[in-house]
Amino acid sequence: MTPRARIAPSILSADFARLSDEIARCEAGGADVIHIDVMDGCFVPNLTFGAKVIETVRRLTALPLDVHLMVVEPEKYFDDFARAGATGLTIHAEVAPHMHRQIARIKELGCLAGVAVNPATPLDSVSEIAFDLDLLLIMTVNPGFGGQSFIGAMLDKIRRARALLDASRSSAALEVDGGVARDTIANCWRAGADTFVAGNAVFSAHDPVGEIGELRGRCGVSV
Ligand code: DX5
Ligand code: ZN
Image 1: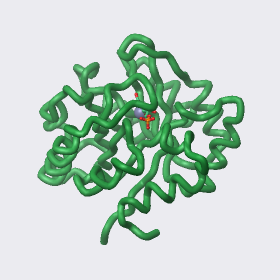
Image 2: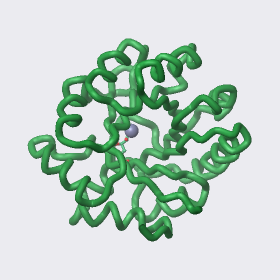
Image 3: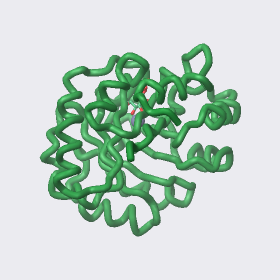
Image 4: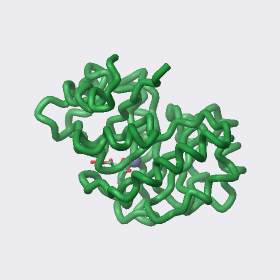
């Protein structure tokens, strides 16, 4: 059976003065997941949200919350974020010297465990642990900001990530994040990704509700 493309709007690009309306639009459009970008001003040059916002979004929707930790020492936040209602916690390979232990701890807390790799980070950094992952996130921009351009050279990395997960018999979701839009999503899908973070493409669209289906439709899957 062909899997369904999963769309994960990133609230980084949402209008926070109308956050509940924005989340309601994601639901109305058939979003599969809400993506929450946590940035610490250290791993990336930008600051965003903490547990309070995760808790707020948790109260606004029953959709899974995919929490992307662009922070150093991510383990400091696992307990608080799990308690706040995160469904999954994704840490960056670049700041995870004890990835095996960190993944185990995320699972112990009842969350799905993900690892993200920056554009310049080789897939080797996750190859030994691929089987244990619930999600592998391929960054298709350098993290820190919404609205950046998709790095086309990452398509080959997505293909190799798909092959790595298959060879490892891993059932992890293969997610892409950064510059995902109408003109880039189909190539990512064909390369083997199944989960698509979209910030600017959804929230800056004329019709954010319709845009979610529009993006999924580009993956050639009728739902
Ligand atoms: C980038 C973040 C992304 C961001 C994507 O550092 O991890 O999740 O919100 O935004 P777009 O879809 O606008 O590139
Ligand atoms: Zn993200």
